[in-house]
Length: 255
Image (cartoon, rainbow, N blue to C red; front, side):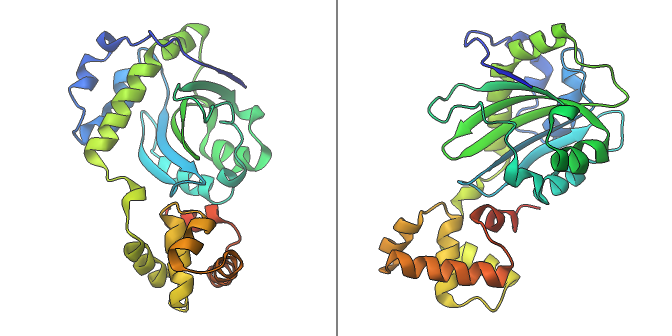
């Protein structure tokens, strides 16, 4: 696996005039691979956000020339591999600069490789990764088993394309998708109760605030409780929900 930072001056907008014209339209998602084929001949792609500070969200995905299993891949990723995914660790949380990542299937950890790559015929991935506080925003393009490996020229083209593509996809998301972190605590509480009606009011209050991104210390201050009491309510709620970690709490709403 290799990771590197693209030059900040590389923004070849002229490469994507037709795609730029689709920003804000639903055709953007299904047309992205077709427009990028001369530069990045991938058979599928997925754009998502994961991490401690957000609800795991698949923003866009599609395939070209093969049956589209990208939603199945996302479900498989959330079934366990994403909790221990370290393939994006090179993205610096202190910098807004994106990081490029190139990885082949044999380099992916065993569980992740079996459930996602081997199960869906994926052999290689190139990604644009950007840290957003405690979360990761990733644009991933996948070569499948029937395709030739990405060439050095294609990886160079991908590097030149990265800044423009990052800006385009984030603009598309901003225009067509609400931000998952903007839900209110009351809305999260309603969604939690629909999953597990046995949750008590305090357990709902604590978990709903976790889902909005609040820390346990912040929850204690907001609810006028001690930190140990907040942890007790959290642990009781997690037990009812059959989970152990905050990332699993977000995953309940992500599939």
